[in-house]
Image 1 (cartoon, one colour):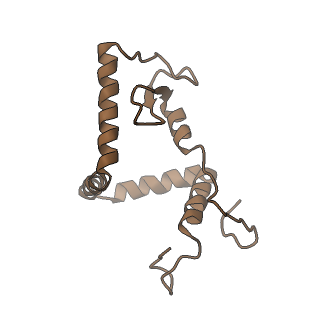
Image 2 (cartoon, rainbow, N blue to C red; image 1 turned 45 degrees about the vertical axis):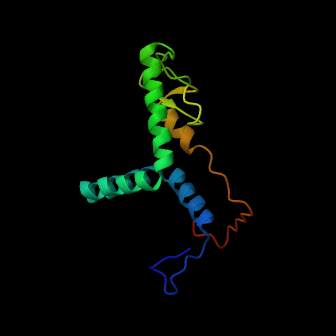
Amino acid sequence: MKNKSKPDGLQVTCRKCSKYFSKLWQTRNPEKFRTMMAKFQREIPMEKKVAYHKKWRYANRDKSRIMHSTHALVARAIKDGRLIKPEHCEKCENTNIHGHHDNYLKPLEVQWICALHHKNMKHKYYEKPRGFQYNKQTSNVEL
């Protein structure tokens, strides 16, 4: 993986391992991560954010279209009465709920969960990359 800050221009770890260690650090340092992200979000001008999202939607236009049409189908199904939105989260009693799709190609298979459980569901499983070997002595990640 490339890294401009290194003298040879290369990262020490592969992309999968870097991603794994980053997620590991984020889960173990949630407060530091939140403050870091908040600072980062404040420093980026809105024009850059809009340009980034426009570029992402263009690069992932197939995925973006499927996601958009799935959300529209769910909204229409709720309005028509074909899909009933429950009053509270499936995992707790929170009444502020979101619809979660495991598979966007099955638009009416929705799990109704609160924002907290939705976040945990999306970020719960960080599998180690295939062939991953962790060596405690050489790692710079706090465990």
